[in-house]
Image (cartoon, rainbow, N blue to C red; front, side, top):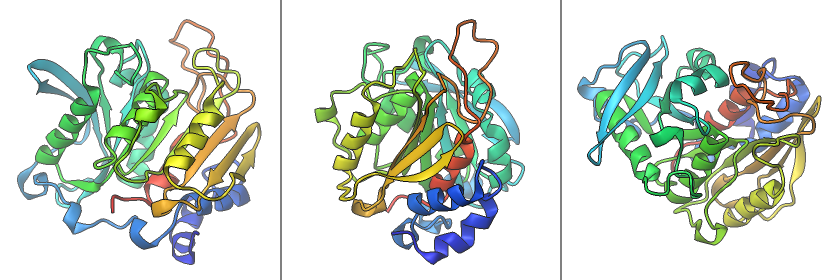
Amino acid sequence: MPSACWYDAHVMKHRMSLATPYALLVFTGALASCGGSSGSTSSTGASLGCANGTLDMGVTHVDLDFDGTGRSYELHVPPSYDGATPTPLVLNFHGLTQTGDAQRSQSHMDNKADQEGYLVGYPNGIRNAWNSGGDETDDVDDVAFTRAVIDDLAARGCIDLTRVYATGMSNGGGMSHRLACEAADVIAAVAPSSGQLSLDPASCDPERPIPVLHFHGKNDTIASYEGVPEMIQAWADRNGCTDEPRVTYQAGDVTCETSDQCDGDASVTLCTAEEAGHCWFGYPCPPEIPIDLGGSTMGINANDAMWALFSSVKLP
């Protein structure tokens, strides 16, 4: 269960960032615990780049040779980055047909990264897609590519390798779920949005219980809500959760339900928006996408909610 140390460190910091302060207190308290999942920076997680690496402030495009193929990612470095302090990293995966730069714009995560002092990597998928376990790009090993991005950043910058997280939209959300299954040794927690696990659930066997926070709108006509509660229950089963999901946040059309009596304090949360479609929670749907996405919700800010989780979790 959450303890007072997490409350003292984080609740006042975040209580104005979501719609309902009391709801946030309950929500973040359910997501986090102290003990072995402390959010403090660990010197043992310092990457090699802490000795001599350099990263440019702001946003840069990074080319990477991976398995003989030219790959790339966009990188946002916050103003507080000093090159010597091991810094958390969030990998934010774009949706189908999109790019890392488009995901930067649509998720608005750079602002949160600047406030909290973490790096954000926005990888670019082959043919604007991710091999999340379906047939989008089944000839591409995007789990290995993700590991290569982490290794590249670890060599070039000062990364806290115990605090690397994944999120993403749609196909990118599905990619985050796949990473939870197959890369839990390097990814501390995931917070997918509007994208389901495409792998055969029976093949998902993470090396450790991994915290999962999932966002989905019931009016999503692109990535249907159907099957989402069952997918989340499967994560609770994998994490050994013994409690039934309980409401930990409610504001506007958004309700979050959490199981937190889980192995390794690996909580599982589903945030459902009754009226939202295929958009990043807390921000308007991107006008540049020429299809009806079904509307967004202001009932919760996805960036604030996921950082409340990420900031309190690290690899054991």
